[in-house]
Length: 210
Image (cartoon, rainbow, N blue to C red; front, top):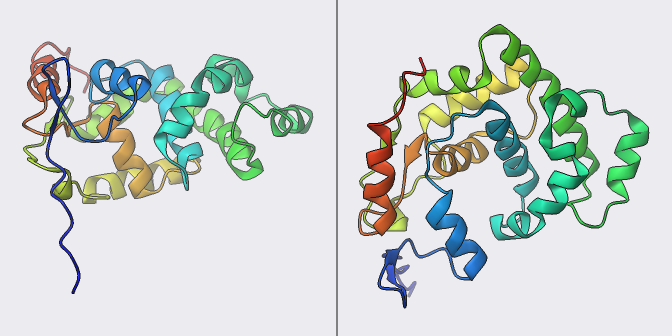
């Protein structure tokens, strides 16, 4: 007999806040409370998060989060202008850097994605390009437990397809949906999590990005 999976409801922490059940160490709790689900409108920051989500493929986000400072140092603070000019000598340097995830395909994908980013940024702005998919306002999830989270959606599949067409790499529908959750395109904090209403309120203060 197969036992049913637990619902993974919000968990009460010692500080009195109920949180989504995935932040389990202080670094993760801080990320959950200050970054995850907050609408991000800075184009460079969006590029950084999309690239890091690509590096996460096959790994856990806590692994990437623990290496994030090393990634930022190795990748020139994710400056797309600089990354777009990386050559094979720089790739070899990155492959020798034990502080990051040393995956040649992902490193070269970040370079290709930087070039794709610059083309979109010049044409219309990368932030505007992405926020247009949700009409400039975060989608508001009403999920009570994490079993209701989808791995991907029709929208994440459409964004993924368009990003790949533009030249981005490591941006499949599942990666894109995780990116959308993290950068606030969808507010997927559980309704019982203290951050759900706080992130929802941020949508009302956003400028028109479409």
